[in-house]
Length: 428
Ligand code: HSE
Image (cartoon, rainbow, N blue to C red):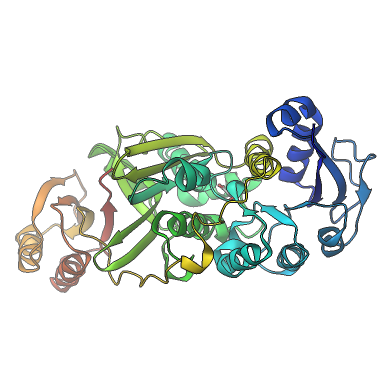
């Protein structure tokens, strides 16, 4: 058997610990599949004394991840610390400059610095891999870059943040408000240290930007992702959308249109009976569409020790087998700077309007929609008190511009008690 592949692991939190457990539990299986053993040379973390439930006694300890990244006895540097800048970025740059392969789970860092890092890796002739950065245990990077390499990708979609999916599912099932479930999720430790990364859609937006780069051969463009979080999703919308046959999901969609690259991460309605509509709790789902393959759906755990470590070790195994694949599916220098789409593709929309209960109010709404060229597909009015009549409208497919025009017209009628709610219905 060949020489061992020597690993240096920076970060011994959930992912790093999970990785150690896999390497320690399955040495023979990994060696047989890779054709060579995996050996851990050294590790690094913030606290040396912490009990992590794994034996570290066989490995050298480095306080400084940059020093770890430069060690002569490290072939692959595993960056499992996280953080967009700081030690993670410094250590990855040091590893690449020292000619080491890099495997990372760090979506925030790659969403911002991915292009420069991929160029650095290619200049050094080493691999920079990130399967664990997108949807945890779901091998969607590999599926897109390798399994679907012969397809023109038409759309990438998915639920990419388990915490948001948990919150939306729990609101629906327990009839709880967003704030009540947010507090619950916080107490359970589901939220990132900065919760806006989760509920603001930022974490999921990072993941979408990485997948879009591979799918469309474009430079990662996180700043062009249209981002909207879940904090304004109401229990009323969840329940009324359900009555109309939909579920509300924080959905990421990337597609190349005639108007440029469209990347959106926003609460959307999806059909309740679709795989996305049936995705409950903290699960993730990635939907990939290609001209030859059609649609494929991947479902699994997007976070957690085992699933994320499973993705990290898959990248390590590729490197052990000698594969040095381009980071984003093609050489970094050939990735295009795609213009961001100035507006999203047309879609049907769900509207919830709280109308004054007065004769003619509904007629004024219908006129405002008609004047903007927005056609009503379905409409429902619920039982109500004396003041406000809740009206739900599902439109036919309409452009976002026409919808915005219609909403301005609706507000100008003076018949609304509350601001209108408009959510996109994604055809899946
Ligand atoms: N906080 C993320 C989630 C996992 O809830 O899916 C890490 O990206």
